[in-house]
Length: 254
Ligand code: GLC
Image (cartoon, rainbow, N blue to C red; front, top):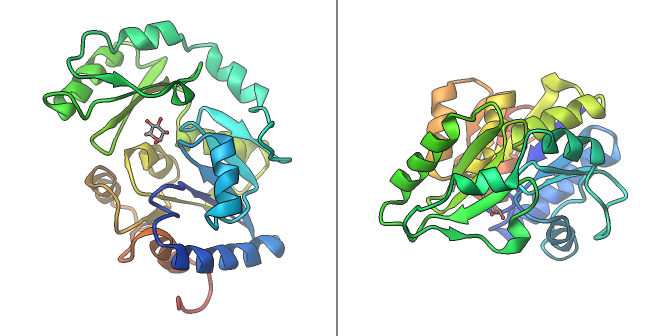
């Protein structure tokens, strides 16, 4: 059985026709016990469920929300609570107050809306800073001294998250793989921006879609692994192309 761990926005979404085809193929594999599907996303759980109902996303087996700081297992409803074991593990080392202190005095920084600022994730926008990349570097420099407890995720030239060092998409998938007894050698990931990087670093097997941001493409190239596939097609079409290349799907991509 394969574990497919995919980001949602920009990776699966963006081309509805290709997504419908990918969804059919994933459902086929899931219904015969050949795939376990994890969404690994910055969305909240209710936004993921709305995506399954309205955007054509396949039904997942597990969902990692808020950039790998929340883990959800079935039954998945809008009232589901994140898994307490993961939450309490992360809370041991994370102080929101301290995380916020790393952002103080950065010119042009704006906090993200409350819904994306949680007890385990401190998120802001840097796109209004005079130089967003240097602002991100400055935050990284401050956090570096506390790298045993915090990490910085910089994505899309806009979003900066301060997460527990023990969290992030890659580590959250690893946690699920252990918890659910999945085969760690058969995990494929898919993504398009910087917040997907930890998935590739952790598993070194996956698909970077053609519309990916350069930050992820550069990382994929630097990993130089046979298992990291740069798709020619964007969005869900690229995910399908990559899953075929990596041997998850048989037959031709149509
Ligand atoms: C998603 C989240 C946002 C985060 C971004 C990058 O868009 O909603 O909070 O900053 O991903 O990780």
